[in-house]
Structure formats: C-alpha cells, structure tokens
Image 1 (cartoon, one colour):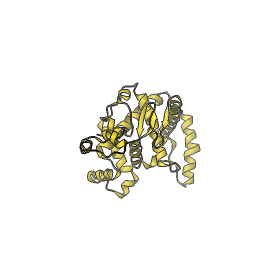
Image 2 (cartoon, rainbow, N blue to C red; image 1 turned 90 degrees about the horizontal axis):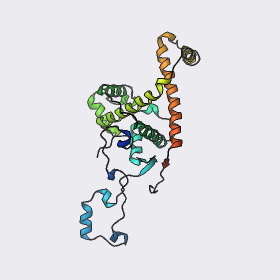
Image 3 (tube, rainbow, N blue to C red; image 1 turned 180 degrees about the vertical axis):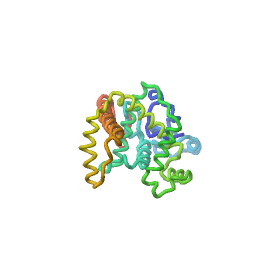
Image 4 (cartoon, one colour; image 1 turned 120 degrees about the vertical axis):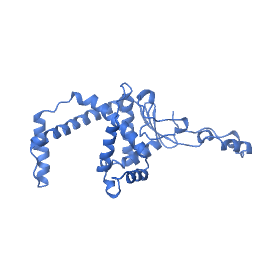
Length: 264
C-alpha cells in the first residue's frame, strides 16, 4: 500500500490523480473477535491456522484510528503523524506557541476542505520542472541541511530517509501542494489589485522602520516595488483564504474523534 499523501480524500470528489491507493485495511479495522474468543474459550488449532493467513484487518487488529472526520472524509492518526514529520521539512511554517499535533490537525482539516472544493475544477498539471525547483529550493533553504549533505543526491536521500520519507513521496507531496496553491491563486489572486499608494505606504511605514531598527540602509523603493507588491498580494490572498476556510468549516461538518470513540 502506498502512503505518501498528507491528505486523506476521496479521489472521486477531488479528481486528483496522485497515485494513492487506499484499501479497507488502511482505515479502521476493528471486527468482532471470533465467537470462541468472545466467550473466553481458547482458539482451536484450525482457528489459529486460519487467522495466521488473514490480513490484520480480518483478524480484528487495529491498523489505524480516525482522528477527524471532515464532511465524511477521514483524517487518520497516521496522517497526523506523517504531517508532523513532514512539517520538520518546513520548520519556518510552524507556530512555536501551539502544540505540533494541533497545528498538524488544523493543516489537515484546511487541506481536506480545499481538496473537497477542488472537485469542481479540472486538476492543474504540475510539471516536473516546477517540482524540481521546489525540491532544489528546499535543499538550499532548509535549516537542517546546514548539518547534512543535502547538496549531494546521496546525502539528500539519506536526509529524507531519516525524516521518514523517500524522495518520490516528497515529490508527490510537493506536486499536490502545488496543485492546491494554483487553485488558491486562481480563486483569489485575479480579483486583487495592489495600488502604488499601498506599496509606498508599506515601504515607508513597515520596511523603512525595520531597516532603521537594524541600522541598515534600505534599498530604493523602485528596486523592490514588485517584491512589495507581491508581499501585499500574498497578505490579501491569505486574509481571503482564511475567511473562506472559516466559512467552509462553519457550513460543513468537522468532527474531532476522541480516543476509543467509534466512528458513526
């Protein structure tokens, strides 16, 4: 079973061909024990021999547990654990004031809601070049790579292995991440316009004080005008996205599962 997606979603709804195969055993496998065991009787040799050839799900072993149900889509404990491990590759996105698990679950809920919305749009084709650039930027910028040989292919592979991923799994995540980003940009960026006055206000009221605090000389406004415009654009997109996700949560059904609680 391939397990690389940080999201648990319905392929029929999301129409995202990322090669994820799900089986019943990958969800929650809890079946009643054989009748003789329920009654406190030891298994016969025949029953033991039969159980030895069964899948864990068929034996009644717990393969995974449901952490959250989002409009009928499942987020599993294993998804949460993978998301926590994956977040180590993007430590600059973490909020140190909140527990890692809470942040992982929040991201998974938001992404599940986004993926459910993606079902109404054709999937965006993500080129290998785009994924290659993402991976190259990560290998260059990741703080943990300062203590690892991420510049070499062998060192990068070893680094990812210690983090619990293969390079193919990481690239699949990056491709899915890029699809979500493209969806967000298509939905929100087109209606946003950043004016010259907004750029000048940001330069004078935000950027210049930061440089002054560091006792450094700020670059001329014209040399970074485009970059400031992109920052302001991203801020507005983020604000609109947060409001939209709140609407999706409020209008949908998100159920946090408690330990030992059975799914409805």
